[in-house]
Length: 96
Image (tube, rainbow, N blue to C red; front, side, top):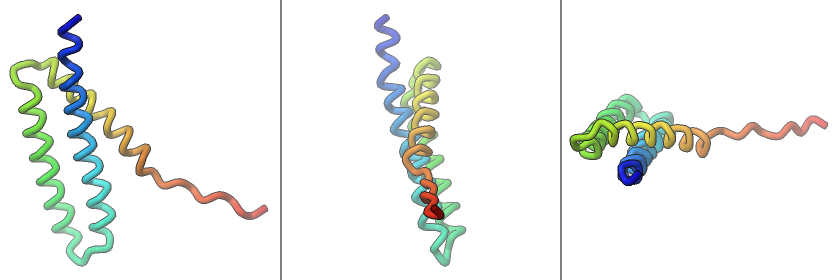
């Protein structure tokens, strides 16, 4: 039972890494679309986000594949949450 509770920090770390990665992607798309140097925004952001997330997973994993799995689950949960929070809401139909 205590082994399960030891995975909670890894899950939380995965959620933070996911929020950083996908939140950063959302921010990059918004900034890159209006920039004259969009390629630099996208490539630079991809390199930074990927490096941070890979190092974060390596640090969280330590010597336990179970912690890596918990962190990956948190990463996927964060993806769903960031997608939900940043979705474009359709405009109401004012035709009537």
